[in-house]
Image 1 (spheres, helix red, strand yellow):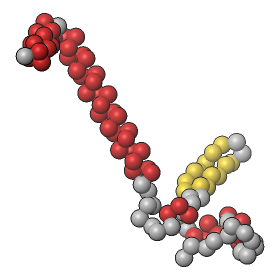
Image 2 (cartoon, helix red, strand yellow):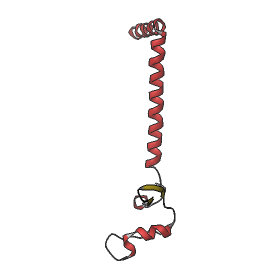
Image 3 (cartoon, helix red, strand yellow):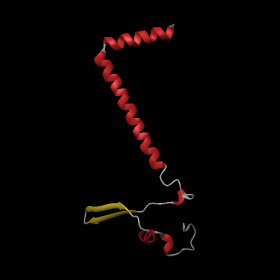
Image 4 (tube, helix red, strand yellow):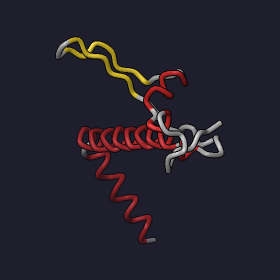
Length: 102
């Protein structure tokens, strides 16, 4: 009985102030959709490369190229040849903390 009175009151206020109600409901819908899209994007980014058994040992090498002060190229390196160039273990593979993933 009390819940029905609340719903009646809500319905009457929605019908009395249609423009204000539309703005509020539309804003709520946009906010919820934005939150859902952001959550989906973040969940995708955190799940990247999780299918590998040693996913915590996967790293990304970022390459940036400058001509003077101007950034000309910026991308993630995809070739293992470039990766070996940047790993400190290449000089001394027997040092502590060096692990090669095959």
